[in-house]
Image (cartoon, rainbow, N blue to C red; front, top):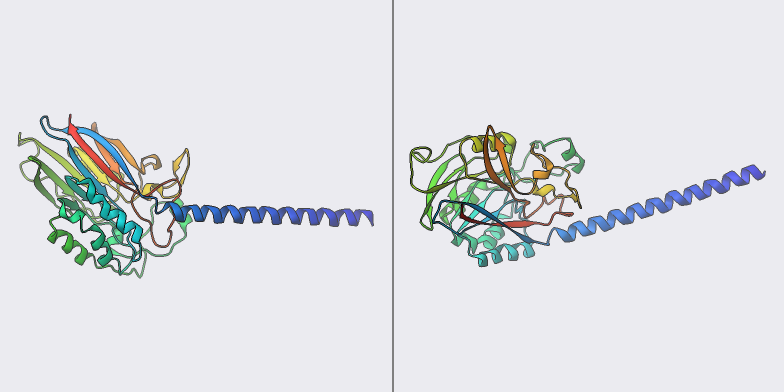
Length: 314
């Protein structure tokens, strides 16, 4: 009888232990989710400096925007985007994934209106073409996300047209030279490598190895897959600008990103680093992005960012 009583007592004790552990786990989960919902609206400006301009030029300031993933009703994000015009950049570079909802274009354009007054260039990301879909977050640990079936198309042609009519240069699988502050910038961009749509247009004719006029070669891409970084690095780019990774979106403090949603190392998921390929080296800035998928609206240890790059003479 005593043994039975002792076993019952131990069972009750173990049950209480499981209940306490489960409750604590649930509390931690709720607190983490709450923090992630808060952090996704804690917008920051990351500032970087690069001495890569030809002698006698600069400073030149590039505002790098990426992965806005706009959803109607994101008033705080809209106000912050509009406020970035106060920086008075010399150039705005938009590396794609502007949308996250079929009705996002009008409020997005309203938010970006002050920035569209400045010179700009852009390329699309997959979420400019298609709305995001609900998926298991754990799938990102298995490799880059896959294209969804039965995708909802977004009105990218309209957004693309509006950017173009506002003066921003479309670099989707094309190149173009633009003179800014007296310096010729040679741009080359590609369609989204995440969808394997990239086609290389090279540099504007006569600018590589044939022209001694001071200029800067800038490559603009959405997803920083290694094959694309290798190509532009070996082809003589002076600067690479990319997004897509969201900086990992959910990071571990003191460690960093757990995933990059492409094949670059996770420690390169955000920031300014040198990329090396076949003996050539090019600085690459990967934006941590401004938004999230509307189906995973949290950020942890990875605040949404725009990047202000100040270029100076080497």
